[in-house]
Each structure stands twice: as structure tokens, then as C-alpha cells.
Length: 423
Image (cartoon, rainbow, N blue to C red; front, side, top):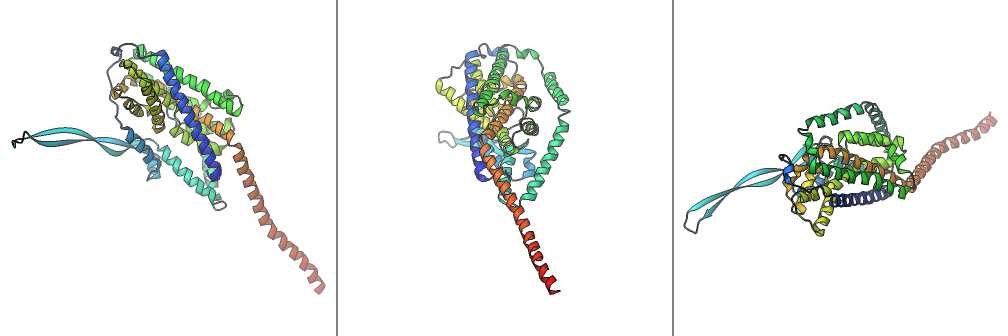
């Protein structure tokens, strides 16, 4: 951000938001079309195993948490925790006078009270907002901010070299992460029947979005081979598959885009952190598809208005989803509430969510990366203008430094003959 002026960063931000919105809406409609065509919820609820508990969340509280996380009061805390509304229970007792006879009876009931709390996980959105503001201020300081810019450039280079070392051990860690999840499954037969069809539907939808829609967008905008670009992202995609977290994959994504695909780091450092927080193509597709699947399991027919509501709510809920494992299950409750579906039925799909979460995270990372390539292509003229302006500033500074020295040397040369004549 410090290397960009406010005008260039503003245009880049608008292009990124337009791309994020477009791809998310497309992903939602792909999910809806796939679940309506394949109809994986056909069958009986008896196929599902015992239910598990899941945290309930209010739509209003979820979006307010998103705003709270944008402005963290403590940057150190934002590196390890993020805000999330939690719910406490309060017993309310009401005294009722029965028919005015003076005989009072007490009625008690429990009500949920929203309480501001925190959960473990990096508050990427808050760090991005702070970094954007801090970077713009450093950029406006020109020469005074140069030492700080050099410091962060050096720190970034050190972190990238550390990431390069870690990447050698990543395949082993990813192998054990996935193996551990497979061992935790109590019954592998849950992958059959309706859940099996549901899993196939999600996978087909993600493949269409990742291998058809996103490459087509990249080709239409840049006129370059998208699969060569995707080939440079293989390490980041494998890491996303293993960690199931787009935020945890960020350092690898930076390295792949900048070193393998040659994307300008001014674009990657601006687009990717924001994308890892709000651009969730895979999550949006998954939530829209899962909501209609739950309706099919309950033998509920959704009209066009309800499907449209699901599409809009899934788009908004995916923006509010955190870049941590299985965050989509929490925001899923918002989508179900919007059309009156039973929120407890989210537990029906928990058995396979660990696997699908890895696939949709990989799709999210791919969408962010292709977005960075598209934004860089569209912003190439602004970036070239900034480079030219910086080059002119450097030349002007060098001339200012050299000019006084030349003037002094000329004066000394002029004085020498005078002194010699006086001698």
C-alpha cells in the first residue's frame, strides 16, 4: 500500500470488489443449479446418523461481528483472536395475578442474551484494514517514510525465505492432517446414500467453478492461458487442501503468485488478504447447495422467491465467514433462517463437512489468486504510471544532490586563477 498512491489503490480496490461480487454470485447460482438437477436429498431421513450440536447464531450479530473485527482495539490480540458474539442464558421470572383474585403465580422461562466474546483465530480483516491505512500514510510521507518501507520490505523477504523452508516439509504435514481426519470418522459408510450424492454434487459444482468459470474469466480479461497460471499455484492449492484455511495459506499464495507467476507484489499484498477474508466462492456455492439439500431432505418445496432469498443470503453470509476451518457451518445457520428451514439440520452434513471444507477452501484460494492476476492486468497502466513517477522522483533527488556539488566545484575552479594571479 505504501508503494501506491490513493488513486491507484482506489481503482484497484473497485476492480477487486467487482471481481469478488461477480464470482461469488456465479458460484451461488452454480450450486443452486447443480442441487436442483441432481436432487441429492431424495430419500428418507432415516439414512442419517445421530445428530451433533452446533452453535446457533443470529444474522444481525454475524454482520455486526464482521464490522467489529474491522477495527480491533488491540493489534496483538488481533493476531490470535477475533470477535464473535456468544449467547448466555438468563432465567426470567414473571408474576401473574390470576383473574384479579390476588393469587399470584410465577412463570419462568429462559432467554438468550448476546454477549461479546472472542474465539481463537487470526482476525485477518482487522489486520488488513489497519495495514491499508498504515500503508497509505507511509506512502504519503514520501522520503520520510522510506526507512519504514525498507524495513517492511526486508521483513517480508525474511518471511518469504522462512516460508520457502517450511514448504519442503508441507507435504508430510498435509498427509498426516488428512489421515487424522479419516481415522476420526466413526463409520465410513456415511459417505453412501444421500450424503454420498450430496458430496458428489458439491464436488461437481466446485469443479465447474474452479476449472471452467474462473479460467474462462481469466482468459477473457487477460487473453493468457489460465492453466499455465494455475500451474504456478499448485503448492498453494495443496496447502489449502491440507490446512483447510485460506488465511493460513496466504504466505504460500504470496510466494507462488510473485515468484512463479510474476504478479506484482503491490497487487498481491492488496488483493489477497482482502480476498482471503471476504471472497469465498467455494463457501457461497456450498451454503446455497446445502440449504436446498436440507429442504429436499425435509421434503419441502422451495418457490422461486425462496431460492432467490437463499442466493442473496448465501452471498452475504460467505462474506462474513472467517478464513478458518469449517467457518461455513456457522454462517450456514443464517442461510437456513432466511427461508425458515430447521437450523438443527445443519448437523446432518457435519459427517462429510471436514472433507468438503478442504475442497471449498482450495476453490477459495484459486479464486483469490486468479483475482489477483486479473486485477494486475487491469491495473497495469496505473502501476506503470506509479513506477514512472517514482523513477522521476529518484532522478530529481539525484540531480538535487549533485547540483550543489557541481556549483561549488565551479566556484573553486573560478577562484583558483584569481589566487594564482594575486600570488
